[in-house]
Amino acid sequence: MIPNVSDLSAWQVVLMRPAHQVQPLADAIQQMGASTILLPTLSIVPLLPSLSLQTSWINQIREADWVMISSQNGVHCAPPLLLQALALTKTCKVVTMGAATTRALVAKGVSVFFTSPPGADSEQLLTEPFFQENEIANKKIMLIAGEGGRTLIADTLTARGALVTWMKVYRQEKPKLALKPLLADWASLNHPFCFMVTSLNCLHHFLDNVSIEHYAWINQQAFIVVSERIAQAARKWGIQHTFVAKSAEKEQLCTALLHVSQFCHTMT
Image (cartoon, rainbow, N blue to C red; front, side, top):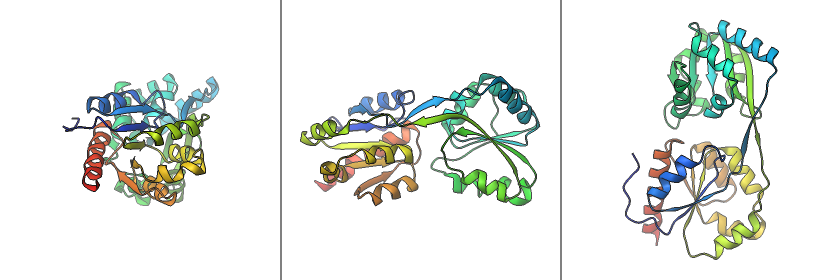
């Protein structure tokens, strides 16, 4: 449920999600009365594994004990034959990093054994009883993910004796960002700004492209992020007002926006 609000009409909310994911969040924020600015700082490009590689992956899924999918991008970019095999297998348990990924899998007919709770990260997932060494040693685990992501889960499960295989089905690309004129324009407006950041790579690419004359303005704006890890990175850049949403779900991001607006109101 989207939270009730009094007046967010002055707020400009910059959304950095990839273009194919952002619209439901933008619609929800606009329903609250705020304006949205779409600024995708990453794009998701599906990889095209050869038919022979897909066949190998399908055979491995049929023999796997566990399949882990890190994000809904992994579902959207996975070859259809791979998802069909995953839906049909009865031998493996599927784990996801969040409710959005689980919904995407269920829509494809895949049963999910465990969904990480809102706000959980890789470190927390690795504390689950079923991923401890006495449970996971010598088990076959398939990780469906993208190129260039964190390797903590794979490294830790391997160290615990699991037999881990990557299935990389997409890559992240960094589009060119012409931020200088945008930031100059935004800074000239008498409006509060909030930047919503749902991945560490989005944050880094955005801040890497901020010119030095706009750092002071950026550091005074509100940033909503979806993990303490991203918040810590933002603080290292000097961002003063960082708020951690309970999850990357649009309802939780909208609730965080309401809290930000109330906090900023009390500061004026």
